Image 1 (spheres, rainbow, N blue to C red):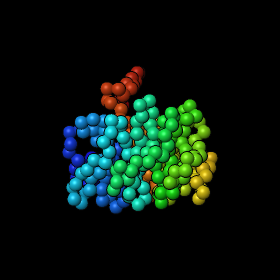
Image 2 (image 1 turned 120 degrees about the horizontal axis):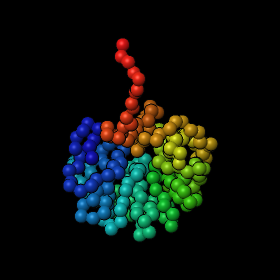
Image 3 (image 1 turned 90 degrees about the vertical axis):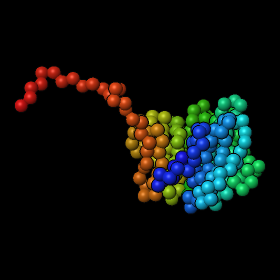
Image 4 (image 1 turned 135 degrees about the vertical axis):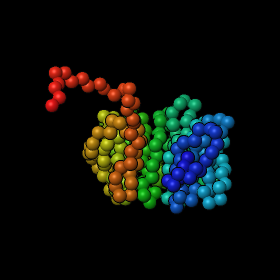
Length: 227
């Protein structure tokens, strides 16, 4: 992992992924494989102190941090191979609370600005769909997508939720003050997007797949004469 200034934050030989920043960029929580499946680690960037939050035989992947920076939302792989959504206290990692745990896969939890609403992806309907839930979680959730969706990201003011449809289009759904979603509208195709986020100014930052030169199509022009 690296900070925006390109300063190296971690240096262990194992895989590290899923970094989420605490408020003020004072610390980072991430998943690291150190002698087993990826578990959660916390690193204080001021002191350089790193500590393990969870030790478990299951794969953990952090996805969001509460508005006050005290808790981390994570998805946990189950024995069935699906994902459950959990909440862990940073100051007391023994306090792990299930948010959504079922035979379906619930994953990709993200919090809106202010931390009042949470988006997630669930396949309980038979295909991945995007939902909105109150936070703290009550167990209730409202569908945002209706024909497949995943990879939801909030607009910075929390009044719109973006997601990628099953047709690989970036969709935008308005979210009112009560957390009720409106009808999603298609913005544009994102067939080559691997991941993305929304900047503070509303622009999208995307990780785009790269076409290898050897795989680029070859165009042949016949009967061409130079001038």
